[in-house]
Image (cartoon, rainbow, N blue to C red; front, side, top):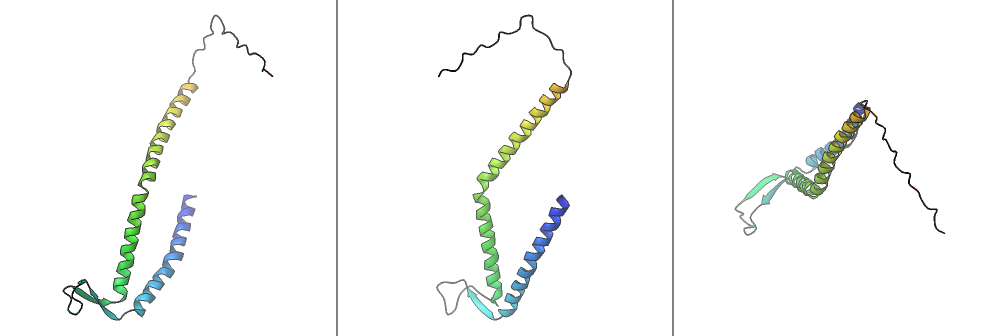
Length: 129
């Protein structure tokens, strides 16, 4: 079953990543013109810090930075749920150990002692109407 899921994940990844790679390559080929990226907000005619790159490069870099920032924000937002899952997993391990210990104690033969005087029976009154 695990191998089947692994194969399905690989197929799904290939079906998503192959068209995405084709689109990115086509975008890069279509946007090869050189642009100047200025990092100086005050000197527009002669910027102190600028780069001349193909148009696709800053766009792809901005896309990657956006994915990283979004992923980090999502990861930080889910910290409460990950902490809860770790705590519940520890509790489940402890409970499994207790159940195993109780099952081990129940399977061992023991001496059953009969009491001299059996306990009194519980007497219930009939329900009131």
